[in-house]
Image (tube, rainbow, N blue to C red; front, side, top):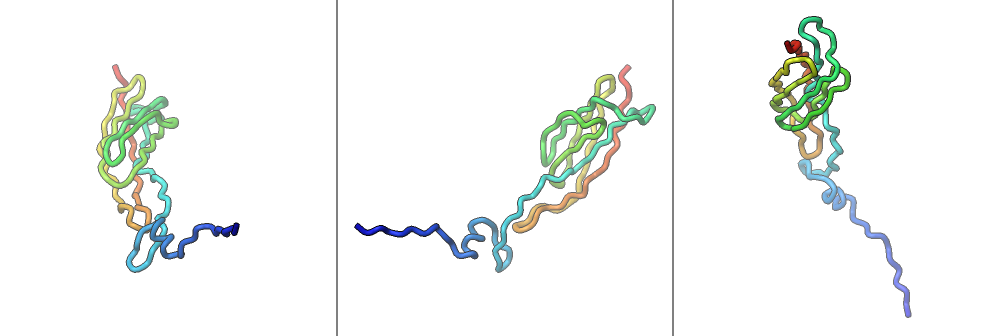
Length: 128
């Protein structure tokens, strides 16, 4: 009985790159893992005193949908370029709505997209 020697499966480099990545022109490349950038950073302030508002929450729709509590008085909306509808609430304050347009470029075959993070101040008025 003869023993057959087995070798690990190996592909030529170009074939492996095509399986794992995408074609970029005449060359193959690996698609990089792209971190989700911060599209919008909201600072939530009291409209009368300009003091940070603790306990704020934001919900958003657009290219990404989600929401949750803000860290301190800062809310971060992650996502790609596009138009976001953002609602901000905090206990004891009237809610506020903002529409924010985020510029940037979409991800291409061999590159991550780019986002121009928008810094937005949201002033909340006290509920009466």
